[in-house]
Image (tube, rainbow, N blue to C red):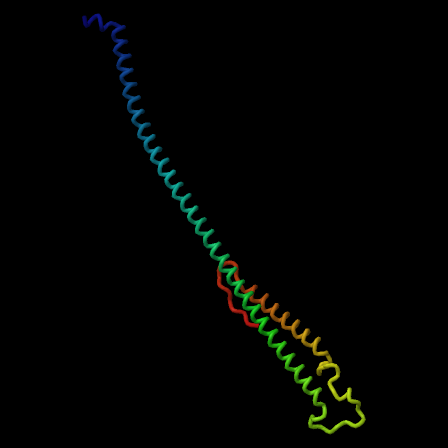
Length: 184
């Protein structure tokens, strides 16, 4: 019986069976290698996806923080500018009130002086008419009538306050640093 199997066909069959067994073993080894490589690539892919998710979360957090910082900075700048506006308006109103009270006081002094033109402590001027003894239509030393002098003073105060307001507003840094005090 062994002789029948060991003929050339039997030997060829055994050789083919051994070759097939070798190929099967080689395929099993190759399959194991690729399975390990696949697991390693899957692990790398998972790590990469996790790193991407962490990076995305960090960028979103940084963007949210930047937006919050921008809102806080905008609120600070608006508050600084509002404080400057209020302070400038208060200073302007106070200076105007002071100038107007001084102008009223001067008008009252001039009116009081016009009511009593004779007793000024100087020698009377002979030959002057009664109209010439009083003030000349409220003219001041600079030659402006009192109403125009007050208007000029008010405009000078307004211009001065505007210049100070511009300097204070320019000192407000919109990029996050608090303003440095500006003195006129």
